[in-house]
Image (cartoon, rainbow, N blue to C red; front, top):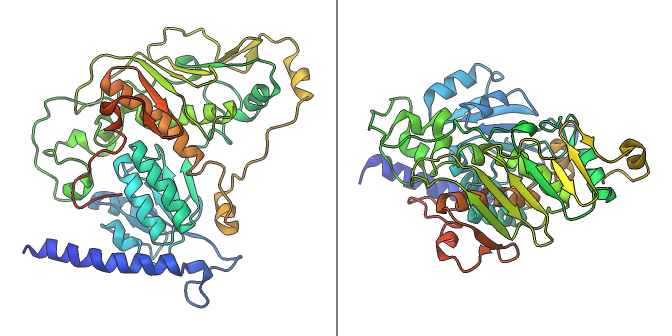
Length: 421
């Protein structure tokens, strides 16, 4: 048997035993070595340091370990790390380090679900980049794992609670207050397009007919692919342009969709459900490379609707429109004396937006595996409809498409052995 495969197989057995041990006795409940006192600084490891991960090295906690399958990424990231930072090529070895409290997952999305579940088993809390998972089925498993292993999970899209929301000139808080006030009426229609700052990154598409290239010596391409189907190496498949391929992400929609849809779920009060229908207007898609689309409509059972206007057909449409009023970009409204009227209503319920506090107190972070799963499911519903080129009906309780075996086959997509979630 090949020594590399034998070594990997032996390591898997060791890693599995180690992960079980950390799950049963996590660092923060141990006395002595590895104990986390309330005054101690939380430590973090970053898996994937090619882009977003490298930018987070000095942010939100002390980085003590980094991991990447590209040696160049590791060497560049290490120059930004504190002295003594450990480096890994295999994330499973990193998870065996008992000094790590938080794992930041900044890999391509086809790895998010697997690493999140493995990190939960290893007793780590998790900060995960968007989209939460590449498929609906992987999201279901991540939810189960966070509950099973009692982990704290944060999804890294922050617009439901922080920063100025795209094109609106305000945070989401006053938008939610307006919706909750009832001044706009019900049901509501939300239109997202370039007027609210979103061009859907149409240039993030894949290429067809890719020529086979030599794999760079610094890259473990087989490990980079991981659960994805094997396809010959081409530089356009990896690193900054991987988002253009269905096996790893979903184009601009997969990359940016949750940034825009998650706040809408929040201010509509839909954090625990999903739309029941998705309609699409898109050209036929390639089976490998992501393409563009014109329009996606997501409709809830109460008539609320979200329109992703990729073609900017309704560029002057209100951001939110109800039977009693409209809200435009810049927080402009056709409701007279809106500011005074809103002052009479209570502010939205406070959210826990300090991830370290959530870790220390074991309370849910504002954007967690439950509400994050729902907004990610909207993205994945839309991606499936675009890929299939047809409208779909969805059951948000059973989490499956209605009378559509082809769409349901894409909820849990096959993974290349030996990977599973």
